Amino acid sequence: MIEKGIENGKVLLAEPFMLDPNFRRSAVLLCEHNEEGSVGFIMNKPLRMRIDELIEDFPEFDSEVFFGGPVQTDTIHYVHNVGEMLDESRYVVDGVYWGGDFSKLKFLISSKLIQPENIRFFVGYSGWSEGQLADEMNLGSWVSANMDANYLFKSIPSRLWEQVMYNKGDVYTVISQVPEDFSWN
Image (tube, rainbow, N blue to C red; front, side):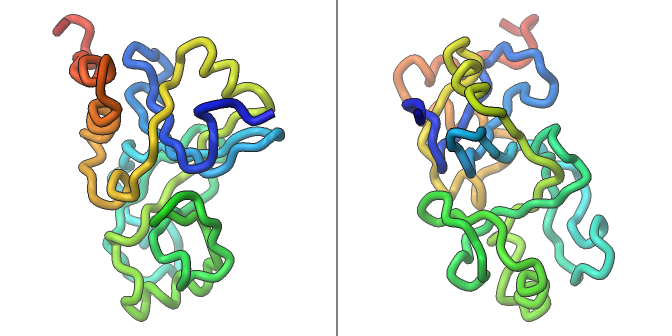
């Protein structure tokens, strides 16, 4: 059974007082959710390194790498808005695709057909086993929000959690203003 609020293309916002340092104030793009589990990528934790510094023989490309999550941190993933150009891409939500043929990706980057504003790279991913994410949602660890491609490609990562929370409206507008450091409250 697929639970309400947990589906491909949603944003999972960590509740404001989550203590887990991997997910504190994180905005996670959920790319896959099914009976076997869930996979997503933290959109707002830059690692301050470029993809061409991380992968040998990658074309020169001024694109920052993000911490996607604590699972398999020896892997690289990418989310982009050029799904029609990149074979084997998986549709996530309007304007957002996941993965695709890596050799063709390098060719498209070398040919300047993909620019840094078209793609985000992630080290590792966020993963949940069967039923785990639903349990965490029921405990109130996460708030589900609709995804907009602009969150990934045009927003300032350090402000993303607040932006998405604020855009939900109602009580979430107030939650978005809760200071990260409890002593400021």
